[in-house]
Length: 415
Image 1 (cartoon, rainbow, N blue to C red):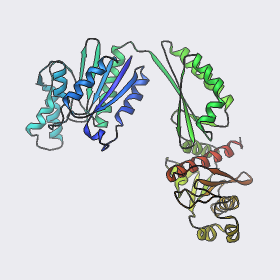
Image 2 (image 1 turned 30 degrees about the vertical axis):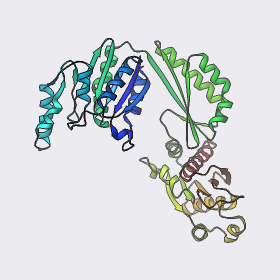
Image 3 (image 1 turned 135 degrees about the vertical axis):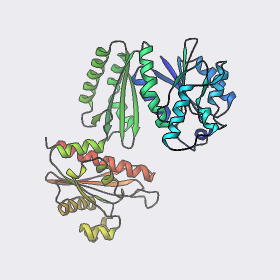
Image 4 (image 1 turned 120 degrees about the vertical axis):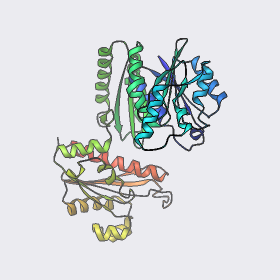
């Protein structure tokens, strides 16, 4: 069963808002066995909408439409759908009651234009909006399903969860889709692909799709298979994941929706360990990642952002002679920062980083993207040198994630 998502609105095309609806819908639809094969964004123009619907019906089974259901003149989706399905717009009594009650609840006067929200094509099934005033519409014609919903994300999501998805599952004979995501850190996409090439071939032979989803310093591997036999599909995916864990054990840090900071936090908390950070080039970003989840005070003690050389010397007792001779971006400084903050904050582990985030400040010996990351704890202290790239934001993100992965590996050594 295939689907297309059509988002309507000039504001999307000019970049005024980002279309997050399609990503969310695609994820939810894939979970129930519906494959989204096309996403189209079009303007608030009758001819464009009609053309998009005409193309969509020839290539997919279900067409989802979001946007253009407001009360103003530029919201033309309902009128266009009425034209497409050769229908008249009528006032739906239940929708009118919903709209009236909503205005009463907010003690706001309802004017004539708001009553138009209750207009729907005569031949549609109405999807009542529990979060707003614009109803959704469900059409069926010549074996195709058309679902029109508001463009406001929380209204659309509510309608999808409470009405659309349950009806699709009830009305259609949908297959099972089994998905599993393996999270890796510390290995690039191309190197990872080379390392697991044989495994990837075996996965493909069993009808499992594999997708590489890279981000800052990490690659997610998503396995997915469509099957009528749920148990066998789940078993097949599980066995391939177990084989993958044997091939790249040091690079896998989790599964599904977990993220690295959360995984590290759970490891620290589970073992009753604490950590502190001394940051230069990341400016506190590592601390932010570790403290974004509730309960982080159980394992995270504090941070020192020692951006300048003077502060490194004054607050972390880094020898100014070392900075003068080897530079602030050096192994000795990274180790010294980690050791000093661990002692100062009395933690089991400490992370440090010092580098050149960019876009300026690099030279031939130490180009932009050069970073030293230090770890202190478990009876030792060391630092590793990395060379990332020229983009400042990406350098900060990848430095933080690399540092957390180094800490994760150190914690696992204690088991």
